[in-house]
Amino acid sequence: MRILIALTYYRPHTSGLTIYAERIARALAARGHSVTVLTSHYRKDLPYEETCDGVKIVRVPVLARISKGVIMPTFGLIANKLVAENDWIQLHLPQFDAAGIALRGRLLRKPTVVTYHCDLHMPPGILAWAANQGVLFMNDLTARFTHKVVTYTQDYADHSPYLSGFKKKIRVFSPPVVLPETDEEAVTDFIAENNPDGRSPVIGMAARLATEKGVEVLLSALPAILNQHPSTRVLFAGPYKGIIGEEDYARRLDPMIKRYEESGVWKFVGELNPQQMAAFYKAIDVLVLPSLNSTEAFGLVQIEAMLNGVPSVASNLPGVRQPVKRHGMGAIAEIGSAESLANAVLKVLDERKSFSPDKEKIRMEYDPDRVAEFYEELFTEISCEISGNDKQ
Image (tube, rainbow, N blue to C red; front, side, top):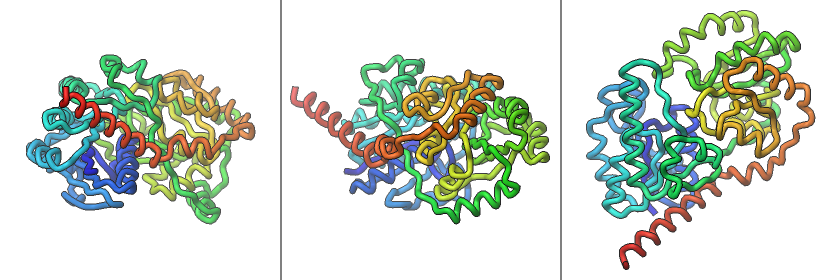
């Protein structure tokens, strides 16, 4: 089938949403479908059209930005053409432009599915607040027009104000997670570059330097952790410079981060490719997700860590706490509490050898091909419902 996938940002932009979209696009293409991704031309050095891993990517010109949002005047024209050309539509929310695509799908009787990744929390400010209200309104319209809404966990569905209004449309399914194997040489090289003095234990954080990630909670928890483990090192994997909409946040944390960088406790390792991420997990003792709000709905990196035998300490947020609860790999810390995070990290480090995940079971649950098959079945179910309604 011909499948259209639409989202505001696509790879190489790094977030859980974009990684999910990339994995499902590749998996559907590998299953023989013709997959097109419609997204924004958010970076000038990217081509307007290209094909990667069997997936066609169409990037729409961006006229202006409002906080993390983009304004794309020609988006509607391009969407008209692509919706008409494709058989199935998958939309990723939050996304301001999704409502128009969902309406087109409904009018053209194309099975349309929304994958809802998280609630939206914009940074402070009148302009950001107005943009937030606009996106919330458009997201609401999208869910009304679409046929089904997919989310990662029932836990998140039960607590999301947005999802609570569309319970009859919701389907819950685990997200796609895959990470390549790595060899000892790659791990040795990664450690030699990023922890050359052999500091231990090593705490990992894999995220963007963004407000909702709660980086300041980890920074505030470090004194208690260092008190018991003076040679602790933190490796932060992910983009940390020039994050759209997060400039003030980065400036606020910069003095504290610099102090820890100068003392050798903290190191930014930057954006890593999948092979480097596999080495990153082998080099850490615990992964932390001190997330602060429902912009974080799961944390795919927790599953990646667990596939490498690494436990996680996650915030007690709906959805985010589920990997630890499902797989018994780590501990849960109270939201925004540096003391709770420090205690949970210390507990996990003390019990590190007791964590032994069923890697094959985890791998199968989050296998992208299995997730792609779920979407095929869901689209087919919707097609049957549409056909049945036509006959009535």
